[in-house]
Image 1 (tube, rainbow, N blue to C red):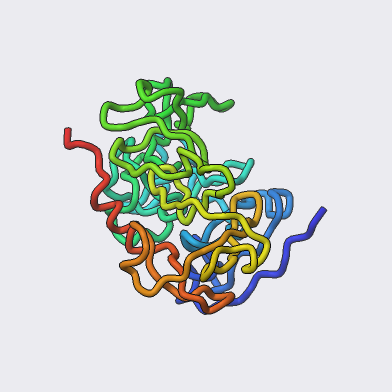
Image 2 (spheres, helix red, strand yellow; image 1 turned 90 degrees about the vertical axis):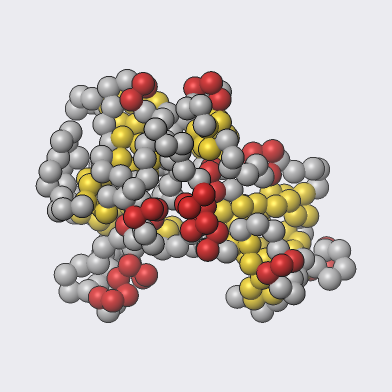
Length: 289
């Protein structure tokens, strides 16, 4: 069995940026882990992306609330939500925001939302869509209700066809699963695929937040058309190499992208514009009831 790694000491001000949702009372990061058994019995091994462009790190996070229906153990303005990734069902207290049930959200951002506009409301949690923490049937969810051993159910994303979604949504299939998203969400190669010989590069792969483009595969820059460079992109289960066109300014990039130097080569290429997320949260809301 792999052992729990020693916690990494960081300054408290750097906690969210370097450790994820929580740091320990002494300012250090929770220990890294590979599975739940590496953690204390009251904690679970939870994956967390420090930002939208980074890979997940796994750390032992402790229970902060019970997760029971009607749980009031969190502080004012907070809500108790299940944290994805652990079989032990870790529940933590997060900021309750303004997004309503069925509206798209960004997984992991509930721990450090840039504004209340980006966090799900009280009694809701984020699975790419804001969903009620508890349910009794599919009618309670913008997706499906999965019954739990302890009684009651938990909403999960999913749909078989657009008719199963709310009137302002459509059923979409993507890298991160199947779910109901706003009809106005842009379609990309994540849903529609690419022509033969091209690979879909998901700069931002969440269903409702798709930013992607089709690029040629390569093994080195010599495989690429004139002027393009061969760069790597981390996919959920693999690393891919594709030809990328260098850029001169943000204007030469598509929606949701900006022109920035690649850390490994220094070549300026189009990469994810984090400001697009703010724009998305502002524009993609459910119709007022």
